[in-house]
Amino acid sequence: MRRLFAKRTDLALEARELWQESAGTATKLAGVKAAEKKVQGYPVTRIDILDRRGEAALGKPAGSYRTLDLSAFWQRSEGFFDRAVRAVGQQLRELIPESGSVLVAGLGNAAMTPDAVGPLAADSVLITRHLIAAMPRQFSGFRPVAVLRTGVLGATGVESAEAVRGLAAQIHPALIIAVDALASRRMGRLCNTIQFSDTGIIPGSGVGNHRAALNQETLGVPVIAVGVPTVVDAATLAADLLEESGLPDIRPERLQSSPGSLMVTPRDIDQQVRDLGKVIGYGINWALQDLEIEEINALLS
View (cartoon, rainbow, N blue to C red):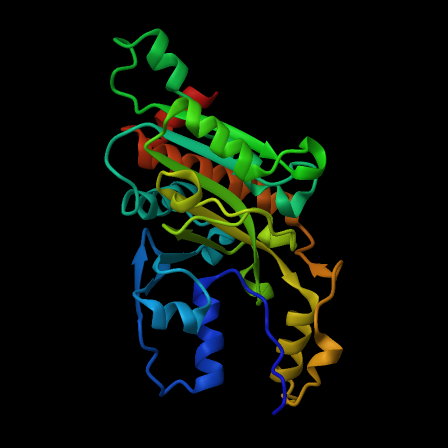
């Protein structure tokens, strides 16, 4: 039997696409439910993995995965930023509890642009935990929020999971929101989509440097993952391009990724990551605090 090349992706939407390509679109995918809608004019695809059958088919833990398509964001039409912020915030509001303190973890390496979306998002999050503690009457209407920029193991000597677990043990958040870079199989989805899930995240997956998982099992509290695909594995991209050219019979050993394999990223990744980091940070604020975007602007300035 010919060994199939395993195309790499962190998106549940693409894992479902790959399953359909291998099994045939007419085949029903047991244990998985999918739905599509529009939020603030931006398409959202929701994939719910319901049981072990769905986990086995898509290679992801059971839970809810929502992929927000922000392709139209880059057209800069009227109200594009505010609508994107509300679309991000609405996805988060549907996944998070209505009350309780929150720890936002900006995962990744601020010095490496494709991996900087987590730290950049953290820069736009309203930090309120210390203000509520110091002036409870004045800030009684705010939800307690703390932010941690974990850095990376090579720069800190500390695993992201260790840093988040240690801080969570001290401040006891009711929820952790982890923001990180992901990998996609399609160039067209890089910096054009945001995935939200209630199953946690593995830091560094977007740049091929998988670390210990951050999820409810490892941290003891619910973890909502927010991920932006910023890179495509070159072998996966080559396989897709060859198939699109009508050459599906690929020798997998020639495409199989190896340690240090090439990653592909958009030419203007720096600007795109900055913009999306701000959208995510503002979306977190919109979801957690009773504030309009103009008020968030004023508080962050």
